[in-house]
Image 1 (cartoon, helix red, strand yellow):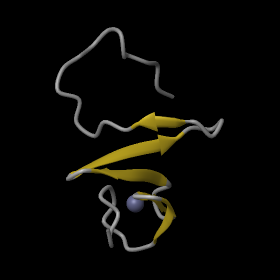
Image 2 (image 1 turned 90 degrees about the horizontal axis):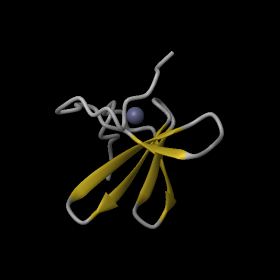
Image 3 (image 1 turned 135 degrees about the horizontal axis):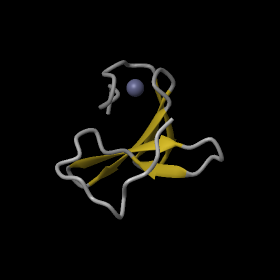
Length: 66
Ligand SMILES: [Zn+2]
């Protein structure tokens, strides 16, 4: 992993086994097999799965933004 899968910058750091952090967009991402999981670090420090392109509206996962 050389570039951030989210913003494509190279300013990333390794924070664990197959886990990386982007200092540019503050996204955390993990390599799971051939897949890259992207997480947003919440204000309280918890990781929230980042979905760049939600395929369909889901009432159970809808959350107020902003
Ligand atoms: Zn990034």
